[in-house]
Amino acid sequence: RVPGTDGTYVLTVGTGVTDSDSNSPAGTTSVEVNFDLLQPTATISEITSLRNTAVGTVTIDFSERVTGFDFEPLNNPIDLQLFRDGQELTNEGEGLGEFVTLGDLDESDMSVSTLTIDLSTLTGIGGDYELRLDGTNIVDLAGNAFNDGDGGITPGTQSVLFEMDTTSPFLTGIRRLSPASVNGLTNDSTVQFRVDFSDDILDADADDFALT
Image 1 (tube, rainbow, N blue to C red):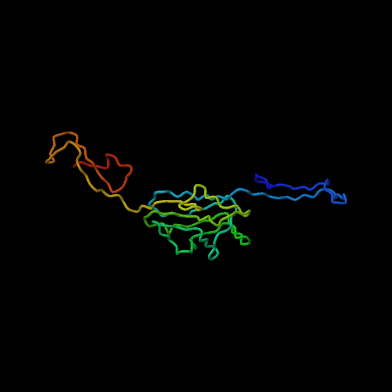
Image 2: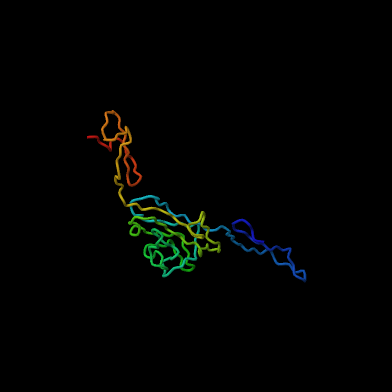
């Protein structure tokens, strides 16, 4: 029976075993077996979700060594994709290629523990981005399937979403709220105005406005 808990187990055959002629083995025989029942997971380094500068280096750390990547060619796992506004930024079927560095690649089983992606030249244009890790074929060395955690945009994937906003906010209008006036004249000591911008702004206060 397979144990239900990860760990190293020792199977021992003792002297109480006999054959049909009542012969017993001399001493005991032991076999050590390692059971790994945990699914591998991935941690993608944090990317600021709303930004106005290109993303730099992103690291994907796996909880254990994994394999199953589709390398076309070597060092180009097509299981990594980058999208902007729903459009893949790499040629279909080519992955991120030259932008990916494999961590501790073992070519005997094609397993890795870390992937590093340089997105500095790919994320300078405004838009909504998705960095997607396709875990459909990824397994650990024991054959456990990839666990995508909360999942990505599609099942079996893990994604990070971020928005690149390169457009500066601008003034769209100023209008007086009170006191009401037909001709624009007032003798009131307090006048309220509404100022509209093209985008949400931060850190605006009275010092940003002047009455002349």
